[in-house]
Image (tube, rainbow, N blue to C red; front, side, top):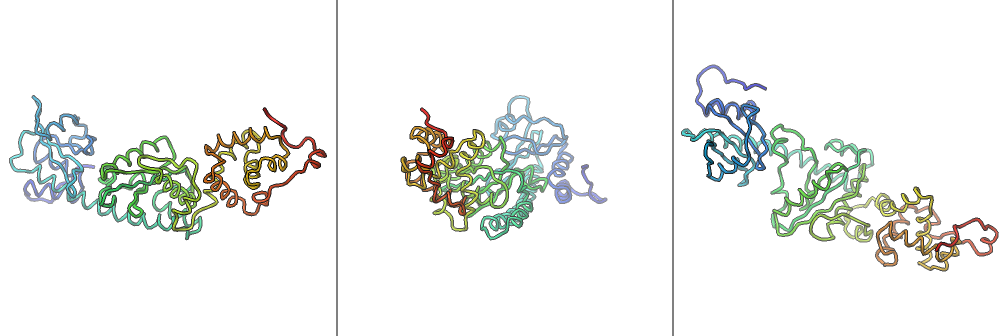
Length: 396
């Protein structure tokens, strides 16, 4: 876009800056400032990334800008830097390649930029509050799957593409919503939707991000921001999910992960009773139960084995080794071999009360109408003798 010119008639330099900001935002402000100062102008974020410049291809060295901002001017450099602040926080830098600003036009431009960013931020906050309401509707479990998917599309989340939930907290006395309000200045300048949905659920920060290689980097970045707000902070990362019920499952997975301590935490093997205790709305139990058992489902599908049925039978018979071997018609060594693999796949101690409670609840929820979930088939020794090819025999 080219810089728009004001109506005919002379206007002072400050008036030109005001007009440029009103009709074209920060990009036009940068162009107008170059016109009134007769110098190269740059707008940068605090990390040194150029957001706008006039001329467009002007190179700005972040280290030189940082030096000039602190009052140090290396030989041969002429830079003036003004911080653009919102609520006492520096959010951008306005840089001019000049030695002095006699008429304080750089200060005027910095104030105009702050006003414009405040306006854009207010609009962004309005969109975010709407998104938070829509996400709350999905998390409540009161919507059909189709309606939940529709809500997600409205806020820019494709319900058919796997996503993860990042849920963060901090011990700051001030809610994170008052401090972590702004997405990238670049997106804000373009009045664009942020690349990743971020809303506030109570005092926690919730982000929905794609399930790709950037998940860990995004999680660590959000954790770092939260850590800067308080002495301690934590962040839970969910497993990948799709759809409305998937968002609810992901939220509770991430919430359960945050209970593991400070830092970035992953859910690992879910603690079903803990999830039930944490929830104050209806949980997507079938989705969570399926996630609990997924490692065994995948292993059985790949190896044509029966680890899932073995575990279900073992738990249904109160972990009675003899009864389980009789019901499945397998040798004790075979059962021991299978239980070892089950432990490895689930990464839990299947002899612990907490683990067996979670797993048993998962079986009951995932197959409520399957009698084998509660009462496994019992193949007697006599029947086994009549069907010698059943079972997989002993293993060493």
